[in-house]
Length: 481
Image 1 (spheres, helix red, strand yellow):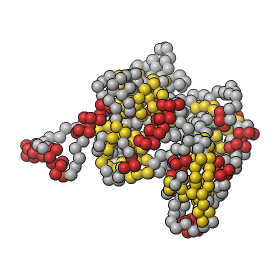
Image 2 (cartoon, one colour):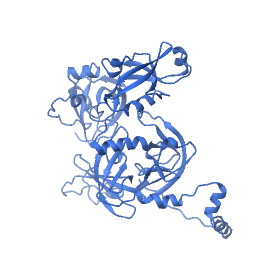
Image 3 (cartoon, one colour):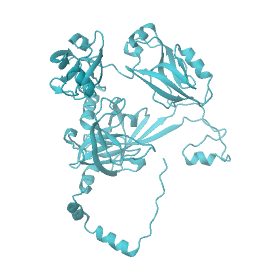
Image 4 (cartoon, one colour):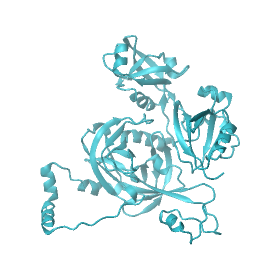
């Protein structure tokens, strides 16, 4: 992304004199005004913040051939897309991106976002003292967007982990990272909200801030004024792609739970009890005789699942888990996923105007990224070639349809690196939507034939099934076949 040019302002002598007076004693002025001084925090904590450069080989078809005399050659060169000269040997193109991270141990373990290193062929970590290391990706967890990396070095500076539960709305926080490639940039703001729920992100109670977070800040630390890391900067809400005052950080306690599992066994296991839930509104609380709208209302119970075996029924309201209050429906999955599979929990349940306790043995949540075949341990079969959309499709077996509880659908086995859109292996295409017409997906050949009739570069909407959720994703057709 191209940064705007800096402009210079002419300063009148009187304005310059006033400016000198204003900054003569900044620390004293800040103390008098009640404003924080971030200088010491930056000096102590910035050495533990790293910048991350990621290289990914873009696995795609033939690149464009343009002569250096072509009027568009200079246009592409300026924006980093240098076309291959005519007659030159074809090279595998590379995509590069940047992010931030921070050291959590003196022997080289560091944290960043999973999306920063997703699909990376090479990861380089640059320290504040200008040393550069190749990093090993120890483990990645896409559900919490956390990745653990390792560099071979000793006696490194490291951050201090704080307690996000002690954060208060209105409290000052700062971020240090690499926005737009500008290393060790500090920005400051306040905590705008806590426990923020975002669409399709119900496992993370995000910390919302108005700290200036931009592309490149992803994976960097969010500090409190004590210099403790309380979060990982992960998401922004933006209409322009840049800062708009709505930034979201993963609480560090959630991240460290993930990190510890990645460090110990290279993957993350989570608990599940097999229920579909919804929020308890004021009207529902009155209907169920609850004194206030709280808890998680059970819509349905998975037959033969942990909750079913423990006696949970549809229309129960789960109010507590091992004595911990469930204040909203989004809190229940966060609590249950933190329980070790195989452990027993006591659920406080409201049923027919009275409370009762039930004991449930927590099961392990299946890997979301694995399709029905992989989850059931079926032997891999030879994959078909990618279609025009860059997707490898296969027909669902009767067993898979029964497991997913769908009449028809097409399994996405693989996704090319060039595909842009919210689609991943293991998703099931339920329907294709094009030009206002919805067509049910019945077979891989049918879907591929339908896509073959569309113009190159056209956008196609698909109704997808991922886990227990359905949603619509839009993907643009490749310009290849």
